[in-house]
Length: 404
Ligand code: LLP
Image: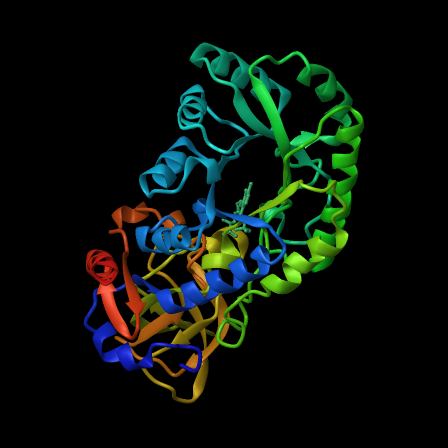
């Protein structure tokens, strides 16, 4: 259990119905502090990609740090507004925005709709005119840069469905002049997720600067340029690397972006802000001896954490009830699907029925992607702050009391 930061709580954890998500609010706040410090000193602004996790306690911490929000649905825009984020800090991306979603965004006067096609611009122009508004938009350009990450989470290649492709730009520039209810305020990019090779971001910074220059020559002086998200985290070693290297990440942009003075640089980070603060806690239901393998069958599975099944993602997995001689297990969930497997041939302490098993780095794209497949109950969330464990209501009460 060398990676488990809450061993003083293991007796309490044993009494909670599993599986459940456990969020470390101290680590979240330290991560947000680091990200903010590195961004602020360069004048950069961070929108939190709310799709990664939309639990209220996390959103409150993020709002209190002064971050904005990056949304990908009308419901996410509504959620951000409900949580008290200033509309002028909310952006809204997505290739398939419906009329209702566009109306929600325009009615709230959000910072920017990030537009992904000429067809979408036409519809936004029409809706804005009908609503008597001028829509603030940013053009999401697909820069055709390989993010060197899993193919299912790559978005910035020409073959991907996202963004305006480079060859369409001359046509786009012609059309932009005829829209009467659109104010193009900036450019937007997003290459993909879980990117650990910083040279990918260097390529993006260089390309984005060239593209800004191209638009400037066509008479567009943008207010901002949004470099998207994608900074990866350590899934292999969360104990030793709990906080992503925000300083190195932003430095790449500082050194490689070349923009006219006054153009504000924005980012949309999700995973790097919230992944490490979340742990999925499950219980061993059976230790099953197969013909050649030993299966550790947990009560949590792909319904709680789909990343291994969907992207062959690795999550460090540890028995937090005991620390005995390691054994090799296939760690699997109870769902009736063979892909419901957290990992094959994983080394864990010898384990027994009833032991708790922690699955790390699950704060991002964990709970939000859970499902009720097999009529499973939704896992609950608990929060640790200053060594105290609470459920969501108790946690929210405690922060309310602290600010009185
Ligand atoms: N901006 C846009 C336009 C995005 O599409 C995304 C993520 C982000 C920002 C935030 O990216 P991040 O900083 O979190 O990498 N479910 C997958 C990840 C999908 C990411 C979708 N877009 C996973 O579990 O790996």
